[in-house]
Image (cartoon, rainbow, N blue to C red):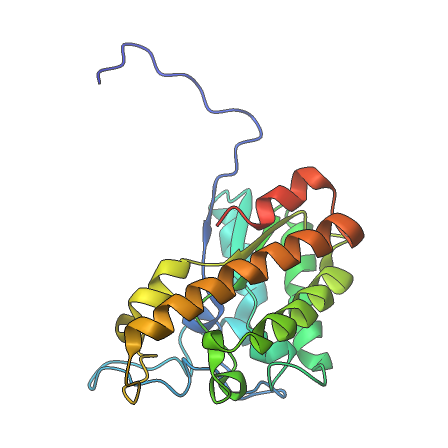
Length: 224
């Protein structure tokens, strides 16, 4: 298709970028963070791991200033589940909550809209040992985690996403370094993981509609 005249972008168009926690934060075992499947995964020999990455955890203020200098109007980032709940559920980690609180405030200071992805491939390893996405108890753990995020950041974060690239974490775990090589029937586990992920989204939809966000924003929650 050839356009003779291009329409201008809307004034409120979100120019920006996105990252994931495990690819940018580093500090994989600092300030109470628990291990994730990424931290414990099987990564290709001879390439870097995810222990330091861009050291965003320690340099987020400098990073946000650079985003503002580039003209970002929005920044989509993921929250590390194990930084909030080191064991996936149970006791919350105050230092993890404080980090993302400071990051969100820093973005807002520069006029950058925070867009939060709740999960980007980094399942708590403690949950993985109990069956991970094949165990429906993971739904309850994720609901607790999501409620904690809403309660702490919902006054400032208007846009939420649940699971990043669900197809990748289910169909291509080998590409992420999270494939369980001991599985006897991987196909069976794929089906159970797909079911768990969609049941989780439906449960969060109900929770959000009742308790936290306006319907217009809640719809964004399950649009992954």
